[in-house]
Every structure is written in C-alpha cells, then in structure tokens.
Length: 165
Length: 394
Image (cartoon, rainbow over all chains, first blue to last red; front, side, top):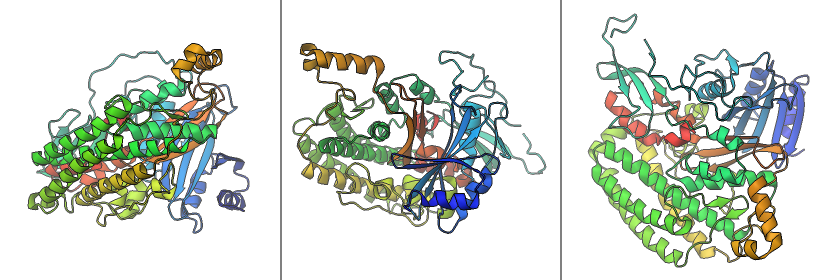
C-alpha cells in the first residue's frame, strides 16, 4: 500500500457506506463521498493521528450541467503538513437541493471560500455564520460560474448600498 | 452613529476602496472606540473580472495572458504555474533548458514582488527613501524581464509545453549587474529599517498570529513562514529544478509584521542564490517540447512547410487537446501557494479553471489581525500581508 492509497483505505475502514468512488490520476488522489456526513469525514481527515490533513488548501465547486446526474461537485483540497500528502475530496450536490454542511467550524479559513462558492454557484452552506456574496455585489442576479449563465450577459451596476447598520 | 448595546460612542471609518494610505482596491470598514479597533469587516471584489469564467471560454493557451493579471507584481510565476498545471494534465515533461528558464524567471519575479511589497509598506509608514531605493532596484530587474519576454508586466511568457523565447544574449551579465544593484539596495534598506526605532515600534508585536491559527486560516508563503512553520512548495513538492539548487527557507518566530518583513528580505537573497546557481548550470537545448500538436511550430516553417501550416492552423483554431481528467498543481507564488485546479472534458478549452489565490486566505484573517490594535496599525499590517487586488478578486 503506497502513500496515495493509505488515506483512502483509512477512510474506507471508517466510512464504508459514504465512499462513492476513488480515483488516481497523474499522481492526484481523489475520493468521492456522499454529502450527508461530509463534516465528519473532513474532521476525521484533519484530526486522525496518522493522516493529519491540517490545511484546507482550497474549496471550490464544478458545475457539470447535463454531464452528470448530480449537477454540482463541491471540491475540497486538503494538505497534510506532517506527511506532505495531498488529497482531493469531492461531494456531488444536486440542483434540486444545492446545500452542503459548512466546514467553518473545522477550519475557520473555510469562511471566505464557502462565500465565494455561494456567490459563484449558488450552493448554500448550512451552518455558515455569514453567507453573503463576496466578489459580487448584493444586487447581482444569478450565479455567474454556473454553465447556464451566459458569458456575455450584462447587469446594471448599482450604486453603493447600505452595508452595515 | 451610536454602537448598539454600548454606552461608549463608536465611530465607523471606511478605509478604501480608494484610500491615500492604502494600496490595492479593498474596503475595510473599522469600528472604532476612540482609536482602538473593536471590530472590522473587509470587502473585496472591486477588481473582479471573471477570470475563471473567461478561462472556460478560451483555449488553453489563450488563458496565459489572463494569468498575467492575477498577481501583477510577479506575473511570471502565474504564467509558469498555470502552464505547469496543464502540462501535468497532459502528462508531458518540458526540456531541461525550459525548466531552468522558468525557474530563473520565476525567481526574478519573486524578487520584484518582495521589493514592491516592502517598498510600499515602508513608504506608507513614512520611510519614503526605502520606496525610492527599492523601486529603482526593481527597475533593473524589470529591464531584464523586458529583455527576455518583451514586456514589463503583461509578460505572457510561457506556453503549454515551453516558453516563447530563449534568454537574450548577455543575459548573464545583465543579471550580474542587476543583482549587484539589488543587493546594494537591500543592504541600504536593511540598515535603514531593521534596527530603526520607529519602524520597530510600529511593526513588532503588531498583527501577531500564531502558527496553529495561521494554519487554520490557510496561510501559506512568507506570512506562514513568519510564524515559524516550515512550508514552502519549492521544498515540500519540488517542481522545475528546485531539487537541484541549494537554497534555504527563512523562518520567523513571532508571526508579527516585523517577521513578515524580515522573511521577505531574506527570501530575496535566497532567490538570487537560486538564479545564480541556475545560470551556472543551465544546459543548452530546445526551449519547448518538439510535438506539433502541443507547441506551435516556428514561423518560418509555417510559411514553407504544409505539415507545419496544418498543425499551426489546428492549434490556433482548436487549441491543445487535453485528455479528460482533473489535476491540482501548486507552485510557490510570491505570497504563498498558488494552486491551479483544472478540469478537462477532452476538448481544446478547459472545462473549469480554478485559481487558489494565496492572499485570499491571508486576507480573510485581516480582521482578526488588526482587532484590538490602533487605527494606525491597519497600515503596517495591511502592507505586510501584500494583498494583490488582481489575485484576490480574479
């Protein structure tokens, strides 16, 4: 068993029913998991003595409109400083129920990353302390990184809004 | 304006999006009690251009110019990071000479970035001399970059599978001369700032973050290393030729503004060491892969040879065909881990390009860094974070 497979084996032991698939491509390890227990899975990866994936390097989303049965995939890139390993966790999310549990209480730094995914894809993170748009303005309509958002679409710029009381 | 639930008067102050003491378009709303910051909120997005959306609608090579505009103080590192992510997806290796050139140019870019960061931060603290010294030193490096790439800022120097041009003649002499000037400037600035009472008072113990907390926030780069965590992508997952050159990773201890300054200052010396070693060892040979379905054939062949003309046409019209799959590839940017996550569906255009901007993760800790400090401390802390609008907003 090499280091690429070790975290996957550990995950399979603990969360047998949650793992949908795994993939090794160009040296990257990918695990696809169900979204229901994503918080437990990420928390396990972070806190397990042998794994110690302490960095949440990136959190993003991909829109597979018409390509996959579940439209969105939320992607977590983790890094373990102690082991010098990387792993990618993917969570399929359907269009009808675009919600995922927020991981802000596992990594405080997930805050802005989740806000950006909400802004760009319209995925709601349950339990996020402050889920509002981050790169675009509040009056913006739609979520521009969705594949059905037209590239050339223009929206009026609005003046400054009352930001905070 | 009265703060809710508190008898004391609170004042709300807007710093930015355009503020004389700040560089970069970012809005910081601070809630003050006297001069003390009790709360703050950071609003970014003023420079949002939709990089990721644009990338989905361009061929792989057409994305390269957009990457110039990410961190526009060190555009070459973005160029290199992006094409290396695509090359990882393609599963190809570039020739040795190309690797050396990419390393040299990345490291020169890192120096320009650190020079700019320290210069701007010092100028905002009143040390205008430092600004002039470093801007002048940076000019010599930009002349080198211009001689190589043809542009100072919008370099677009790399292509999938190689680089556009070889290093110019007498590049070595140019580097020697430029580095002499840079070393002189660093020496001067070191003497001006590092033991300067005013500078120490304003940076020591200001904007402190401990290692554990920095990791929680996703800090990378000089800001993480200032807390004492030894993480540098160049050492942890060596790419290009970083395995073959000898260099050190400077670390701080306190994680404050001063440590971030001193780490950057020392990193410039290390970058110069890398460039000098690379220039000694650089082999001759091709600067791009010899594969007509990936890299454009030379122009004189396109005009005289039908095969070359056909591959030129196909590359321009359809783009590089990248096999379906997804990769994440990270390089050490000037601010930290610059990651590219690319999803391909097998066509000539990327299905999704995601950039992990290093200063995004660092900037979200800004409110935490300035909490409890004086309003004047916003300036040195912001300067030491080196937020780049083009990178954070994409």
